[in-house]
Structures are given as C-alpha cells and as structure tokens.
Length: 252
Image (tube, rainbow, N blue to C red; front, side, top):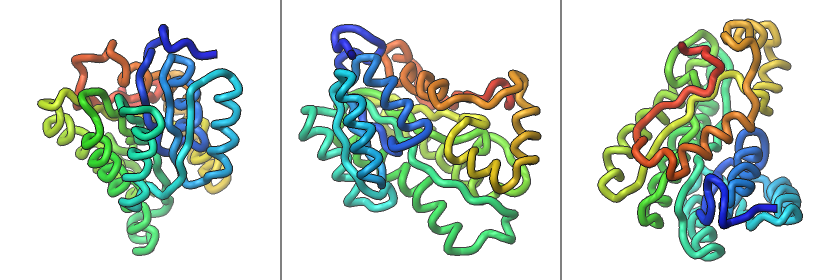
C-alpha cells in the first residue's frame, strides 16, 4: 500500500502517457509506490482499467483516461481529467511511442506519417497541454538510444527519437522560467512489447544489440521507470534539459 507521507514522489500528482504496457505500466506502478497519485493514459481502455483496478487494489490512488496521443483533443482531456480528479498536475511522464523497421527507402509514407504523429507530435501535444496546467514541477519524455546515435534499419524511428530530444531541450529553455524542469530518458534495449516484436521480426539483430551492451543484458521496464521517478522527484531539482541514457553502458 502506498504512503503519501513518504516516498520519492510523496504527495505529487503525476500523469503517465503510454501507461498500458511495458515501461509505462511499470513506471505508473513505481510512481504510485513512491507516494504519487497517478493518472494513467493510453489508447486501450480495457488494459488501463485492469491495471488501474490492480493498483487501486494495492491501496494506490490511481485513475485512468483513454485516448490517442496524436489527437489534440484527447491529450487535452488527459490533462483535464487529471486536474479534475486530483486537483492539480505536478509531473508527467510522456512515454507513448511506436516503432517502424526498415531502411529509409523502404518505409511507406503512411507509416512515416503515423510514426511522426505519435512519437513527435504526440510528445509536443503533451508538453503543450501539461505546462498549461502546471505551476512548477517536472516533465520526463521518453526517447531512445536511437535518438543519440544512428544504425541501419531504424532510420524513421531514430529520426523521431532525435526530434523528441530536440523538443525536450527546447522545452527546458521555454519552461524553465516557469519553474518546470523537462528531461528525457534514452533507454537502450528494454524487455518491452516493442523488443518482443523486434525479436520476432529479426532475432539476430536483437541479440547483436544486446551483446553490444557492456552489462550484457537488456534493461527492464522497472529500471527505466525508476530513472523517470528520480527525474520527476525533488532530488533532481536542478536537472533540466538532460538526456539520461538507461542503456547498460551501450552509448558510453
């Protein structure tokens, strides 16, 4: 059971966008265990309802709202529902994202547009709505090691994740005077649904990537969630505009 009088995020209200599975779901659990009241947001209402029921059953103060991160009205509702339910917004973890495999000349225009709509436009929409509701606080976006360096076969995805880092750095400048910190995580290979799908599509490529990690393992969603919790907390009070790799040393 959570104790709002203690924990890394004690008494804070945090919105998690992309909360239904993987990193987002584990992050929501960690934030709740660290004392936060948490609003879960994603497309799948059924998955969110089940996760919310489980967390509430463990004594946490949680709720959910469903919608598409690439739709402005849905993102506005994510934030509005959070404020209506909990009274304010102190922090947000913008974690929604999709992947697209293939060389740049192999990606269709439809797939490219959808990738940018979710990963880039979605992050921008979240930032825009969140800062309008916040009176100080912290925002964490999810990029990728693909936003730091390139490799073959993931060019469109990597372009979108480079853009998330650019948005974060600009947001740190734009909103720092308002007392809002904005940082970005760059996970390496992580045992998430996205990695599971990549294993099905190209298992050899996944193993090569994991073997190149100095710690010789993929990360876990909880390890990424713990990094997000720290950046959202007051312990990271003078950190803004930072890119934090959570990659087992891959980009070292």
